Image 1 (cartoon, one colour):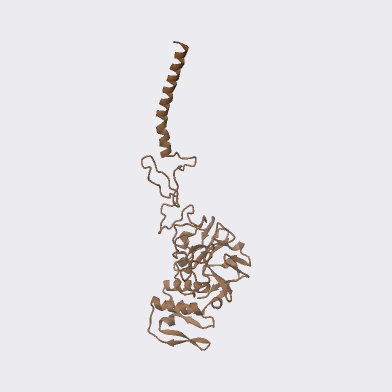
Image 2 (spheres, helix red, strand yellow):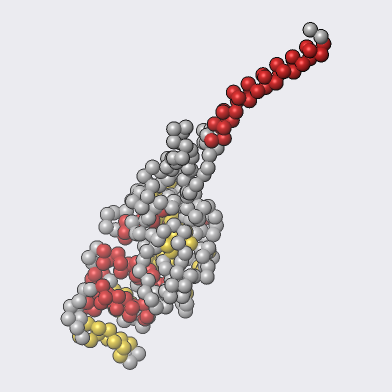
Amino acid sequence: MTEKKAIGAACALGAVILLLMIIIIRPFSRFEEQYPMADASGVSGGSVSGAGMSVNADADSPGDTVADVTNPSSGDNASSTPATSDSVTGIPLVHASGNTLESRVDVPAGFTRTTEDEGSLGAFLRGYKLKKDGSPVHLYNKELKSDQNAHVAVFALPLEKEDLQQCADSVMRVYAEYFRSQSEESRISFTLSDGFKASYQRWREGMRIIESGDSFEYVDRAEFDGSDATYKKFMRIVFAYAGTYSLETDSKKVKKLSSIKIGDIFLQAGSPGHVVMVVDTCEDESGRKAFLLAQGYMPAQQFHLLKNPAHDDDPWYYVDEVSFPFKTPEYTFDKMCLRRPMY
């Protein structure tokens, strides 16, 4: 064989070998494109969709997705919280799947929620329904509140279509809704700004509150009526004529922050003044306490759970971090002003 023929034969053989390699390897390349191999963490290189991780399942069902395995029971009725947050707030302790305060907001690491008796205000608030995760705060007229960066969640607390149910009124509404849920309507009684005691028990028995000079008085105007409509009319009177001064009258001072409990309020009475309400508490093994705050505001708006401006990634307020002036997202309380409503 001449030198030229030998070179030609070698080139032909090389071309055949290269063609065979392409034929053998190409199917595996297509397979890798269609079914990406897992990386070192064990998570597929496939697509991510929605709040939970969605990955290609296996070669038999390339189009299927795997549910969020961190929270297999996630949904409207889930009682457990997922391991990671999928909330639009981006706060790790806040979980979009939770539809109540307790299931939406987890406690910090090392903490547990304080024990609350069944039927207590604490249990009522923890189980209170929340609006969908990411819901904005609306005003009484359905318009959006101008500041949408102060809240973590929005309570489904009723809001009437007038500019009346403001900060102090929202606290009174929470207590009134709680008493009604426990069939304790006789406890729904609020002091109006001039000192007059507005009693829902008397109202539903037919007594009506009317202005009499510079004050108010009861007059017998109707038969017994415990309907929702009658209740709302009573609360409208309260919203119109009660405020932060009323809450001051109907509450007592709490001397130590360490004694804080669900239902307590930080109150600065005045015109306008402001009030925020403690809606949950937790503590660690050493006795360190933390709490969550919620508020209504002006103009009348939905009751909402507040962020903690001191912690971008945690809505809880820690007792040992609180000092005065005490800053909340939209109001600063000048001095120690923790109080306990005596309804």
